[in-house]
Amino acid sequence: MSDRFSDHLVFVDESGDHGLDNIDPDYPMFVLAFCIMRKEDYVATLTPAIQRFKIKHFGHDAIVLHERDIRKDQGNFGFLKTKDKKQEFIDELTAIITAAPFKLICSVIHEKSLRDGENYEKIQLPLEIAFVDKKSNSAGLQLADLVARPVGMSIFKPNQHNRAFDALRSKFYASGAGKLEGYGLKCFP
Image 1 (cartoon, rainbow, N blue to C red):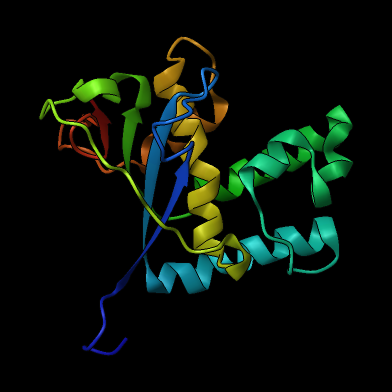
Image 2: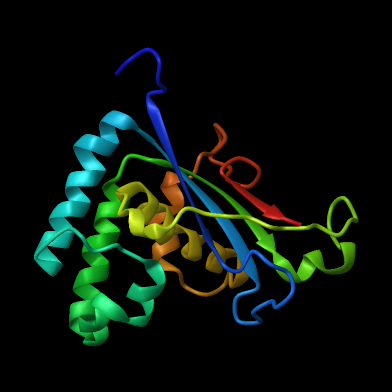
């Protein structure tokens, strides 16, 4: 790689609604997921694994892997309505994510706790955030999309089994003692 550029790429995606006006009671979370990966690993490992996966399941690699569509069996993922097909698909995708050499850093906001200045600074927060369209078909952005909701659900419903989060646990940036909170995972408030 050139000395002009970093050796790493950072892919960021969100889960949840970034506004505070209409909080979803079923998922009152906003998660920013940062997937940090060496460029060499991105080119040699993640991109070919994602492309092989897409070609196997769709016959081409132009599909954008979107967590919500996969979870709800919508659009191009309608074939996942069969339990066995969905299980095979999820197992393979989980294996790719587990094997991918990246570090994960997430910020999680409990939206209900940020009403009326109920936050660390005791101020009303004007959250207005813009994000890049997922249609760019970047393997890294799709990875960030796939990891964000499982992290949010692990905080929102900590006692509910979360296989996806279990697969991500080793990906978080952590202290030398393995502590995630305050290192690779920060929850607000």
